[in-house]
Length: 386
Image 1 (cartoon, rainbow, N blue to C red):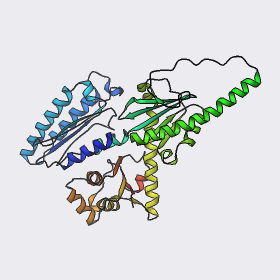
Image 2 (image 1 turned 180 degrees about the vertical axis):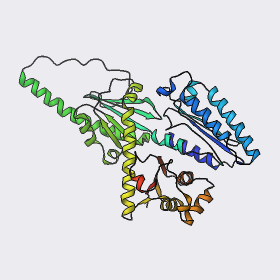
Image 3 (image 1 turned 90 degrees about the vertical axis):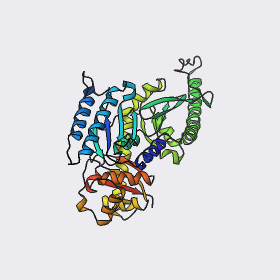
Image 4 (image 1 turned 180 degrees about the horizontal axis):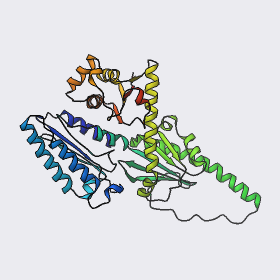
């Protein structure tokens, strides 16, 4: 799994022992952003300002301050010197003063905002946020006689080797571009035409059921995290009903668009806002369920104290946090403060993220606007495994 591999790489990154400071840099290099259309793009200005800020911060430790300045100069050189392709739509760079931490990652999904910080280790939540929003998705494009299955991941869309299931063949075959115009049915009276239409509808219903089963099998084999369907009229509803129950739960949304003949990249671009909304709806729903279950004493936890305790026991399935909502450690109980100290992190948010990474929990960063339940929960919620 592509996202799983990236998460494993992040685990290895935070496990690396680093002596001295680690610089974490995130640039929103998306060329589609109007702010990046000027001669000096907004991301370059934000990078310079962020690096100047951390390089000018004085702690009274001359050696550390000089190391940070060198790291900042290296980060500016590497990001500004990268090609547009290597910068993609966002960049994550981690470099440590002792050379043990050195990682440059390009994404095709923009980070929420430009961010530069120095800590004792890599600050990874913005990278986890991009990974979570870019989860591997099957795009199901439906027409009256064909269904295409595409792969969307990290902002990229591609055709699969066997991506089209059609009415005539009743089997998967390789997509070879837009279909030729269909011939018309001629001759016959009204009754013949009506009988023909009835037969077509019966066959089409069978086709949708067979295609839904084939899509479910392929999506399961390919390990898609979710599905998004695009279909006109009643086709979408018929496909949804025909999906097996376990796969229906992965269907994030159905969009009323006919995209069957578009190239993969154009189909992905058309569905991009719906993919983003599906992520928001899914995380908001999980946040509301976590709060409801927490109130009922069930498999949910709200607030940093309860979530940190559940993470320590490996019980968290899905951690949802607002990384911008700062928590005063003085308000936490002694067990939570000890957990943060043991994690070796300087903030509650980073301790939560590290513990989640180490215990295999999904991590979603969200604002209180995206997940209203976070307001009541002090910025931290979790769905529990048990």
